[in-house]
Length: 587
Image (cartoon, rainbow, N blue to C red):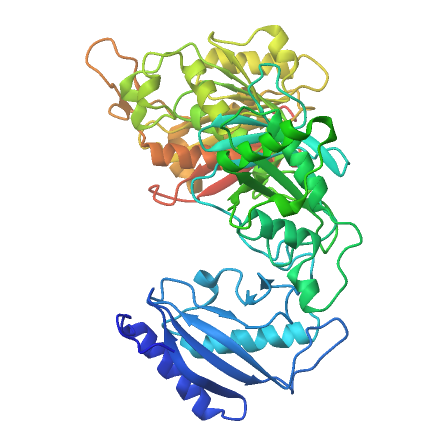
């Protein structure tokens, strides 16, 4: 060990952590010992070696095999804002769930939330480590859920490389030809057929025979070695695979590089079998242009007899790792799964009126996974709308419907967005709608939806939304289910009679009463159409709440009226639902 000159002194946090470790060792000398002298590195971290008496831990078949005593190295960062890590200095744990790169133990999935370094301190950290070892020895990790990636849980990411987006499963072949399509300067999309407009980069997609529990390495030669004869197998004195895979990888990679322009990098996607089964894990690699050009020269030299041996690859040739945004349905779960807004998944939704509520609702519907969205509004974006509607400066002067459509396509380019700049979509567009949301606050539009509901037979789910003119903190949603003969305007009228007669719902009376002087806003002097007060945060919150409530009706059909108030609205209740009674009442 060096003398410590030119190395930073321990920080207060490191001193505190080390003191806690020493106290714990003094209290339980039969269980915990500190080994040697803590080592400080030039980057300021402090490495502390612990020895734990692990013999008493219960074991089970399939559990992690522990020796009587095990040593662990804690790396204490200079600040508690960085993660404290724990690892071993052998390969015996490699390939086991929650063991990364063969040596680092993942005892927290999210240490920022699961461990308080200041209050719980190192005692809590030691307790978590002991709990991890207990579970590991007893074989209580679920490999399908644990951090048991085919590549040892290593995050492969070289700064400056683009993200590779994968949304479709590839053909069931060991070696496939893929195409990387540039979407932005930092994004490439993987496809398995060339785009008609050309310009895509060819990339081989190769399924290898086994997992990579130690990761893919930092050099190209190291990757090929890991694929053919992993260090883990050598450590365990296992026999190498019967057939080396590196020649096929190299030959396929060179053939692909020869079809890409000189001076361009060459990409490679490895499909790595997952130890728990299911779809393979995808790794994206990139060879810099000089290395790719060397492969091209080899391909041109050998011609049709192309067969490249791994011995021709320089040992210092670095490989770059691209982050992979793996969005294949088989491996990715929607983060909004199980929420009410999930009712919009796969639906064709119309949003009539792209203003204070409609512009936000349209975006929420797109993010919820609607397959098609039709937006309709005859208006134009002006600068004054930006304080509360879902537009930006570049949209000023543009059609509202067109501007909103651009934003929706930017949010999710897999959604088909249809635009109607008029007051109402044409009959052909209406025929495909599954949900129609009227956010126009137009009396005539309400009559149109009522006639649609009364036309006989099932109709789309029909909804009207509005807010109050005074504050923009209240919301109203009237819903007509597909088999209800009354439209949302009629349902709204019936609900208004009930609400106005109920003192407990006084907060919502204003939604049906004539607008008092001063409640409406005249945004500019002159002939300016009155509108309602409201801030973007409030309107987005009202729109989001109403969208979720409508999603509930798409999951469980029903008709009625929802009344909602934001937490800071001047009154209560904050939500009230009036189920629609289709029985006509006597006047």
